[in-house]
Image (spheres, rainbow, N blue to C red):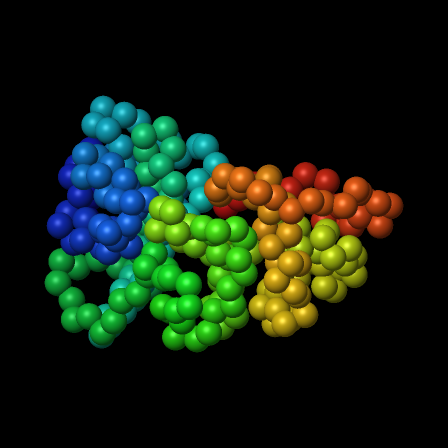
Length: 250
């Protein structure tokens, strides 16, 4: 179907976006309010199902780096699976994706089997995706780092805003390797080992890595940070191994 832009969100699109942006959350509530006033400006850069929301008359920004993911969920139907992704609002524009696993358009009606989102997760709960245990690492009084081994996902729970920020594994793992001074490429360059070998790392290891990660790829304001030891010759070597400049977030 050929689209004409700008256009209004379709009812099904709005319903799916609001599903991953719970109304009871102060943080996600702000996004619901923004989206209620926005139109679909045009297609995004990631293919079918990716569009940019903004104010009527604006031009969609598809050249700047993609903002971080602030909400993610899945709807499973009897014949397909839809993933819903909402990215951080930048320049009064929000990049969203509602994507079919079959590459098809999202129908207005379908027989639903189940749906889940990371947006509603709270500490001491299982993973909404896999119903498996989640390791929790307390960062401070309002922030918890959640790591789901089975999902191979990690996110930051912000109790003050009732939001869960998904964290790309690669940059976080790089900071963990620097903290632990691990320079073996068979370990340091394989970020998925975090989930396979999670028990090897203490809460303090995981917390320190997040604090260092947050300095470079800021997710939240941290009032109290753990102190970092001065850089040593070993750490300098590891920095060169992982790259002097951290990678930008996807």
